[in-house]
Amino acid sequence: MGDSAPAEAVVDVRELRYAIDGRAIFDGLNLRALRGQITAVMGPSGTGKTTLLRLLMGAIRPDGGRVSVFGEEVARLSRPALYGLRRRIGMLFQNGALMSDLSVFENVAFPLRAHTRLPEPLLRRLVLMKLQAVGLRGAAGMAPGALSGGMARRVALARAIAMDPELLIYDEPFVGLDPISLGVILRLIETLNATLGITSIVVTHDVEEISRIAHQSYLLAGGRAVAAGSPAELRATAAPVVNQFMKGLPDGPVPFHVPAPDYRTQLLERDP
Amino acid sequence: MKNPLLDAIVRMGRVALFLLRVLGQCLPSLRYPRLLVAQIYNAGARSLIIVMLCGLFVGMVLGLQGYDLLQRFGSESALGVAAALGLVRELGPVITALLFAGRAGTALTSEIGLMRATDQLTAMEMMAVDPVRRVVAPRFLGGIIAMPLLTAIFNVIGIFGAQLIGVGLIGVESGSFWSQMQSQVETSDINEGLIKSLCFGVACSLMAVYEGFHAEPTAEGVGLATTRTVVSSAVLTLLLDYMLTAAFLNS
Image 1 (tube, each protein chain N blue to C red):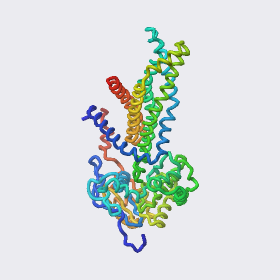
Image 2 (tube, rainbow over the protein chains, first blue to last red):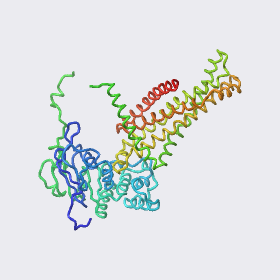
Image 3 (spheres, each protein chain N blue to C red):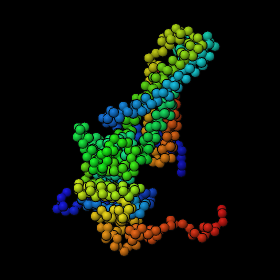
Image 4 (cartoon, each protein chain N blue to C red):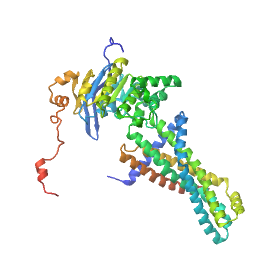
C-alpha cells in the first residue's frame, strides 16, 4: 500500500454491456479504480449507477465485457470464491441497511462474528475502535431505529470497515443528509482512504461534494463513461453532457421533458 | 399469455426449490443455537395465548356438540373419548396450524419482507453471509419445532374445556369421561396428531419464509406477501390434512 507501488487497478471494467428487459443500461462501459485512490462515479438518476455496483459485487452477471475486482473476473467466480472476494470489500448502502433486530454494537460485530472466531474481549475492543472511528462509540447500545439518518449511515460505515476491507464501495453516501452529517461523511471517506489506504469507489450525483475529495471521476451517460479525469478536468470539459451535469442545468442533452406527443395537439384533442 | 395453471405449477416448483435450499442450510444454521432459540420463542411462545384461548373454546364447543349428539344414542359417557380423539387426531393439529399461520406466519413474512425491502438481506449477501442460513433457516426450524408443542398445549386445554362443559356443566359422570378416554385413545392416535402437526409445521413455516424472502421490496409488496402466506398456508394445511387422514385410515 506504499506510495512507491505503481498504481494498479483494483477494479477494472472493460466494454461492459448489460440490459434489463431489452433496455441497454450499459453499452461498452470502461472504468478503472486505482489502488489507494478515491474514484467517483457520477451520473444523472437512472444511468445504472446502482446496477454497476451490483455487477461489481457479483450479484448479477454482465451480458458482455468483463468486470474484474482484485484481478479476478467476478462473473466467473464460484459462490464460495465470490463470498471470499466479498469479504475483502466493504459496502455502504444508501439507507444503511442495518439489521433492525440488532443493536448498533451487534451490527458492527455482525461480519466479525460471521467470519471470525475472535474471543469476546478482543471482538469488543475491535468494535469499539470501529465505532470510535466514526464517532459513535457512545451510541453502541442504541437500536438502529433510534438513530438519525446520518448516524445510521455512520454505523453502516463502521460495519463496512469492520473486516478491514481493501476496497470500500459507497452507494449514494450523501443522499438526504443535512450539511453537518454530509460534511462528516465526506471527511470520513477521505480519512479512511488516507489513513488506511483503502481504495474507494463513490457512486453519487452530488458533484460539488465529491469533487472536493475524488482523485478520479467518471461521468456516466447513455450506458458509457462520457468523461473521465480529475474533477478539475471534468469541469473544464466542453462536452455538452458533461457541462450540463457538472453545472446542474435543467435542460440540455439530458432533456427536461420525457418524450411525449406534441403538447398542443394533446391539449386540443377531443376527449375520447 | 397468462395461464393460471402454469403459474401455479411454476410457483410450486419455486417453493420446492426454495425448500431444498433452506434444508441445505438447516444444519449449518445450527452453528448459531441462539438464533434458533429466539425463533422458537418468537413463533411458539408468542402464539401461546391465542392457541390456549382458542383451544379452550374449541374444547367447550366439543363438549356441547358432542353431548348433544351422543345423548341421542344414550352414549353420553363416551364424551371424553369423542372429544379427545377429535382434538388429538384432527382439530388440534389443524386449528393450531391455522392459528399459527395467522399469528406467527404473518409475522415471519412481514419481518423477512421488511428485511428485504430495507436491503438488510442484500447487505448480508454483500458481507458474504448467506441470508438463507442466517435469517431463513432458523425461522423455518423454529416454526417446525414450535408447531407440535403448540398443538400439544392446544389439545390439553381443549380436553380441559370439554371436561369443563361435559362434566362440570352438563353433568356427565367424571369417572366414565376419563376412564373411557384412557382405554380408547391409543398411542397411534397421538402419533397421527404428532405427524400431522409436524407436516403442517413444515408447510406453514415454509410458506411464511418463502413469501417473505420473495416479497416485492415495497410496502405494498410486503402486505401482499403476508396475505399470500395466510391463504396458501390455510389451503395447504387443509389439503395435507385430507391426504394424511386418508393415509392413516387406510393403514
